[in-house]
Amino acid sequence: MWQSFIEYVADEEIWLSLGFTIIKIIFIILIAGITVRLAKTIIANVFNIRSKAPLHVSERREKTLLKLLQNIVTYVVYFVAILTILSAVSIDVTGLIAGAGILGLAVGFGAQNLVRDIITGFFIIFEDQFSVGDYVKIGQAEGHVEEIGLRTTKIKSWTGELHIFPNGSVNEVTNFSIHNSVAVVDISIAYEEDIDRAERALEELLDSLEGKYEEIIFKPELLGVQTLGASDIVMRVIAETEPMKHWYVARALRKDIKNHLDKIGIEIPFPRMVMYSRQDEEQNAYGKTRKNRAQSE
Image (tube, rainbow, N blue to C red; front, side, top):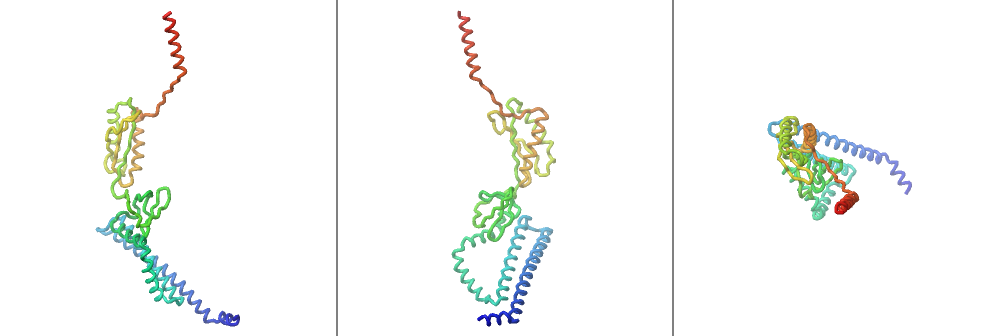
């Protein structure tokens, strides 16, 4: 037994065959990697050329289709590379494919969720429900779409968490990136202030802001008195902005409004506390009683 093993190991043809097989596998992997990189570059260049054409789809959709096509090319090339490697190590690929087909048919009945994810992914892309770069809300997750794949969608929140959803589970989507946004700013005014004077001051400020912020589509508008609170009068200002710019614009408007109101002397209310001393009240009541008795006597 040991003699036959030594003869088998010492056989030069076996080592040459093994060496050629390893070289083939390395060559196949290198060719697959180069092909994937070249194909991704070609696809990216094609989309760059299309973006300069007079007729083209939206930039959001182009980014999504670009990512999807690059993923498909990667899957196909590496699948072919795996079959080629199996063929290089003398494994019957034809029988393997036939067996995989039968196995796939059997597994397909139990892989309905996978099929649903893939079909839903295609509908998401071609119906342009949302695209890569959009700010969306799916379920409890909210953030920018990082990737839309054949099976999953990846959303990155502003705090850094990456949420991965199977496409089949995306039942309801809120897309914040398609239409213009509206910045809503509520300003509290003290009851002691003149409301008409405060409205004139706010109108004057909003007129001066026209053209100051590029993110604002139309001049900010004062809607008037929104609510009458327990200790303040709330006035509302709105401004139509570019998609997803309403948070920045709202912060900037609050700062400008606060500085302007301070400049002209209009007070923004703050909580007030009235202290009531029961002991002092009892002493005052006792003093009044004694005084009344003295006067009656």
